[in-house]
Length: 209
Image 1 (cartoon, one colour):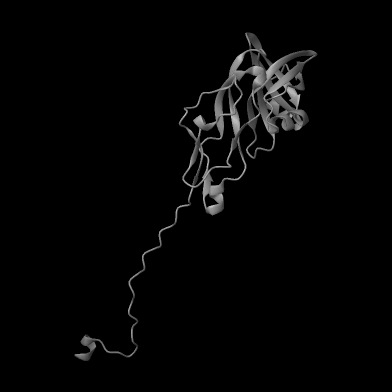
Image 2: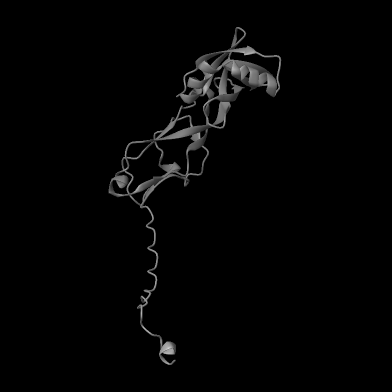
């Protein structure tokens, strides 16, 4: 479950790409905070603070803006082309007891026995769309592979150790991960053997001359 981490932010009066680019060059990430019946506010946060927070998977933060603290959810994150630098963050104001919809990343844990006999894992789902209390947003959903053999799948309905207050909105029969044998490439058909030409052998036409 996410624990609220304190993040200091400052209001910013200016907007626009030129101003935001100048902030990024100074190690500052432009951001917005909105929701909960209040007006959106343009803010900025330190990249040194925001980057490890985002990478750790934390969702809920105590956002301190010019001395006032409010609880917020990391709603949207934009990275640069190479996913090295933060471009923008959206924070959503939340009530601690409010139920919200959020995408929670899936973390595969353990080794599938099927991979030890030549199988490979295919993972159609990398996150689950969930409804839960704002203060109970999990950092991840663990999917254990200890019993997954070749030809078997783990579906959403197979997740039995989820928090009681969390409801997964994905269809119960959705496949999270399955173990399959890699497809064998078909051998190219052998080309017809070409009879080598015998040097000096006369053809029938030549022999008739």
